[in-house]
Amino acid sequence: MTNIADRLALARAKIKQASNDSSHVRLLAVSKTKPATDVLDAYRAGQREFGENYVQEGVEKVAMLADYQDVIWHFIGPLQSNKTRLVATHFDWVQSVDREKIATRLAEQRSEGTSPLQICIQVNIDNESQKAGVLPEDVPALAAHINALPTLTLRGLMAIPSNTQDAAQQKASFDAMHDLFQRLKAQYKQVDTLSMGMSGDLDTAIQAGSTMVRLGTAIFGQREKKKQ
Ligand SMILES: *Cc1c(COP(=O)(O)O)cnc(C)c1O
Image 1: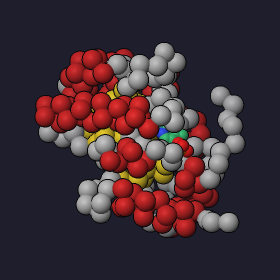
Image 2: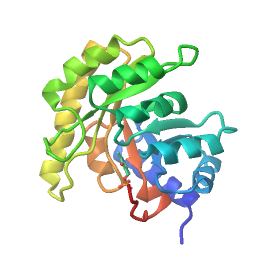
Image 3: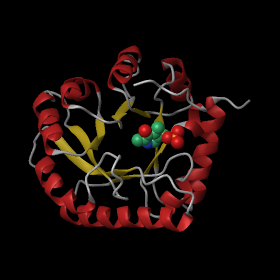
């Protein structure tokens, strides 16, 4: 069996290959449902950015690993307004912002003494009724709202395209995201993050211009189904 360090090395090699060694594609290790000891294994293998989906579980892991101050924690899951304070207090990034109310609350609850919370807007790129995220046409208004909040820094866009095996459709969704990203970047100079690509589709995502892939299974192995 391969261990976490081996899987990380393999993922880094794949990312390097897909990006022709040139561009800087960041790797976010998605540790949801996995114990803090797994996060520590990845940390010891050089990984510094981790993604969590569930508020309570994420906050517990942040607390357990508080001694490792160079870890960067990304919240990437659905966020209800009654949980924003925990996220604003304990995380460095939130990639799943998809409405003004959530952005406003995160901004109010982020302490002014700390660095701004780094924000990606989640886009529902394939217009799926069950999926979180704003529609592409609603990105500009939400971006303007976030940009006006001093304790938040707008960094870019995140998407989870529809779960399809159709390579052409996958590519079309990633291309559409890249297009939106270019337009956002032209307007806001601090925007530098296009978060797309997971264990099953990182090659296509990187070829379409992803700057951050989010890998769970490829790093930590299969997950148990989680009751929410
Ligand atoms: C779980 C999750 C991932 C990682 O998915 P894998 O297929 O295990 O790599 C990435 N992004 C988000 C938003 C997730 O919820």
